Length: 593
Ligand code: M6R
Image (cartoon, rainbow, N blue to C red):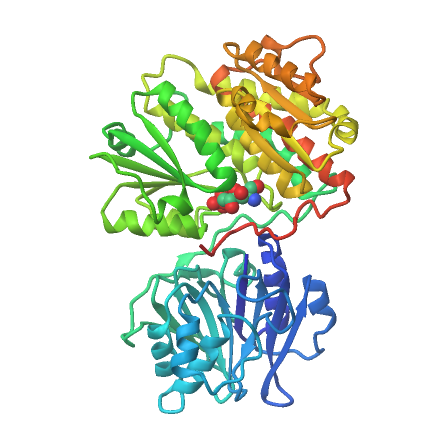
């Protein structure tokens, strides 16, 4: 989703901002722009382009500059167009901004203050720059920005430049992430830690409703009333994005193949000879709760569904799983003593943050499971557990999903009486994953003949059904085939009406108790013309199953049954010649509600 980068310092801001924008590309965007200080004219030059960053790059001027801001936009208000791309400049030409987030009251603000203004874009963001311009007629820039922020409702990460004082840059944040980095040669500011690397040695994650004023050497932090705030910089330590796809054509394929190694890393990080490396106090605290509420979105929510079964089978604690965007505004009746677990690959999902803010207000205990230890949700929850999946670049989440399940299994195990050897069982899963990935070549051609229609179904029961939901999401998000993940036994209660000649129905069969029921459901759809495909664990496999996976502990079966479904999605998108790592309309990090 939208990305922000700004730089002010002794080095070439144009290069730094463009490098930063490229590092944020993986988040998803549909247009990009920069504003650069032009030393020849002593003013700012605006360049924006629809589409990929390469389009913007081709239009950049040759000069070096000490100050620049840049933005990648993922459209929310107004179509994808050059006019709607950021930065936005006030009609007078004095102020330039980039903005992430959504201004909920932009219509009201237009009516109340800005009826005289001819807006150039359809964005909510342009209101911000016009308000700053308006208020600056009677106030200092600093006060005009603060007055503007007080009028805004919604979320923002914002950078502001003033062409009457070009060697000062302003940043502000509320609900959308903004991080400030300080290096030997200057200040860098961005919406993601990735924007700061190579420039900053130390960083500060801005709190909500704080502002920063930067010059080439230093910065001042203050609140919306103008009071100067103390701060403590932290050492910048990020896993560099592994921008090398190695032997693979796409990051998604590389990340699918990384899963055995990720699982082994998780085992190494969380187990020592005698103990699980999760804070004992946290385990005791969760163990004393009367219910766990898992909150998440998309793939992470699907991992949460598997986690619910794992924790409920291993402990006596009931678990509910909720879609974050629903829970934030329509929570269920809570038990007296709940524990909340937020699961998020990115740690930046705005729907989850909305939940977290409400939970914190009511002093509920919160734990985040995330891949990004410096993320907002990691910082703001009471506790966090890291996924150790390494940077996930493809928009379609694969290795983070299996990492989430593995960490949830370890958490459940730590909460349980521990009468089995989870470390060994997870190691066996890693071997099974590796074994399957080394001989998975048939999927590519199978997919060609199987997925010939606009729609498809995954069916399964119990944990298999939960994997089906994830499998369906993966297939639809990158191949655009409309897919449903369905409880196998529920199909006949209505949805079977959609089955016609050659409708693809893929079954996941790992559960011994229900394997034959799922096979009966497959026969029902075959009788109605469906083209079926089976993914089964060896223990329940038939000779004619299409994919047979090595046996693993039944509770951990989602870690292995999901792998063929990831490859099915990958090859379906590949055959359709689609942009696998950056599917249309999607963003890696969904930072608006
Ligand atoms: O970063 P998060 O795990 O919080 O993201 C949640 C979803 O946006 C994410 O899982 C999304 O569904 C992926 N595109 C799935 O591949």
